[in-house]
Image 1 (cartoon, rainbow, N blue to C red):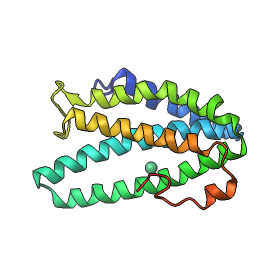
Image 2: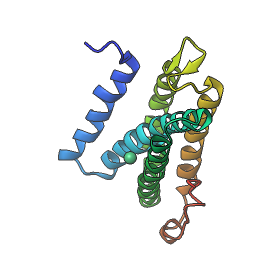
Image 3: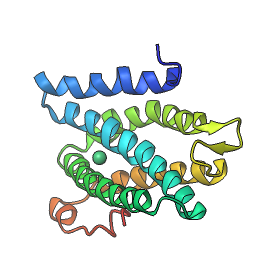
Image 4: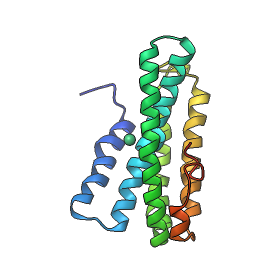
Length: 177
Ligand SMILES: [Fe+2]
């Protein structure tokens, strides 16, 4: 057993994420797609991966070491925001076409995932001082909270919008860049 993985981590990556994704093999309903996208794109990518890249990038930048790795992490960050941008667009489109999804599926899933995601970020801090890459806990936690808030705001605003408004939104409107 790998003791580096916490129970919270295992609950997200070994149970919730595979269940939500594997459901899509037999169920491609708007509910199943919205649920899978909330787990994967809003949390695993939108909060956990982006927070990880943020702290990794920041520590490398501040310490001035490994410029090649810094550049690579910078590219990963840019790539990640592209897929999250697409999936935010997909979720907005689903909410627009099926408004009940926001409360019945997405917000319900968010309520389960938010404390888990924040606990995983918290567990990344060594002895409560610094995270594994040397970043300050407050700064990293604030970044994770901001990510959560931005995702929720964008999705909440999608309810009641017309489809062409969703299609004409820029990356700036999505608060992604
Ligand atoms: Fe991704």
